[in-house]
Length: 152
Image (cartoon, rainbow, N blue to C red; front, side, top):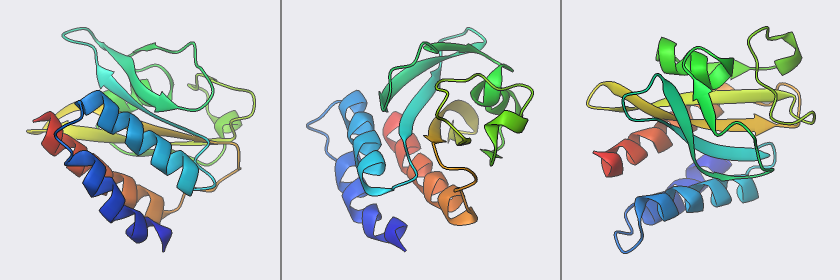
């Protein structure tokens, strides 16, 4: 599977201490969008200080107006509250969905934990209906474990 072939490149990006964390996260977004056909928008959201909201971090894809997302709102806001992965095969079927683009058909959001605290998430939008499989979840969990290490 392509995911395993990307792990060495991702590890190299993440362990490059000559670059800021923000640059490293942006490089991850670029690599994922370039190499995985159904990853059309790739970004990170992080808890915004002590506020009950997420703030957009590095991302690659179409610009979004959703730079701040209240906890509980949309898929990302729900993950901030539930601490659970959220895979959405069809965004049109979701009641609590914040549309970033009319082209988006599906979404996957995986939380990032540092010392047991949900500090953020990786968010992937796809213009393809129902493309996300268990392998995507496991791969993104692996990425978030690595990201958590550089955030700690």
